[in-house]
Length: 299
Image (tube, rainbow, N blue to C red; front, side, top):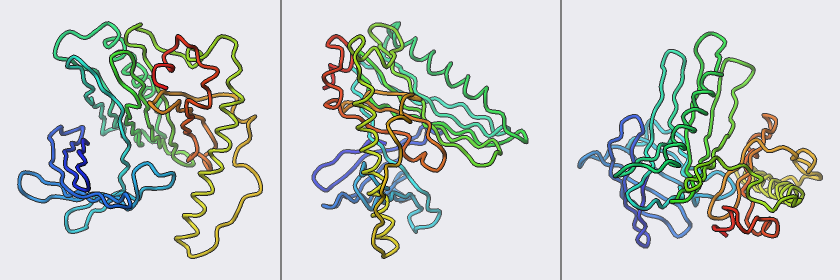
């Protein structure tokens, strides 16, 4: 989806990866951050998006899509993509689908108006290889389940691309699983980056990250509880202890870079999986960053 904001007026387009045809959007953004968009196919109104809260708030933005008459309502998540590729480069979605096994995957590929750099070609091959490995490990109990994966471009420019993959997996076990994995690739240097590449050698950055993550999760948990209490017309209940402890955060399941900071991912138990992802501002780790590393360029 591409949206242009002109005061309270909003216009743009969006497309489904499996179809690729742009649908026109027009609407308004309220002073409170709420958003309402009308979808057009040609001149006909075919649907609408409604977000009751600002995009990016700690709790649910309460976004839905429905037919223009309000039927067939579905939940929607809108997340800002951060990329600015020069020289005709852009990211386009590619699909892998298998109805027999329940696989539906959308993944990014870099394309250009001319020959791609070696780094861009390597990124395309690497993200596809990681996806094919994940699909190969999908073993539904009765031969068919649900394996749904989509992507967010957290950062993309001529030097670097950082991609978050959101995976929903239901192979027929006790409960489905939501998880994240990621790929951050140095397009200029033509190499996949490791988390330690961002920091000075032997710097002890983990405690600073762990402390921030614990505090941030507690703040988000409090916001969720306040939201639930509002919906249920009751007073919020305050917790006496933290959701997670710092010693639970010794191993990341993934990481990524955004213009605002580092995203770190954890594989928490199902009951607290909503906290698997935390944005750590650059200010938290500034003193540990390698002055010649990729993260310094985006502070």
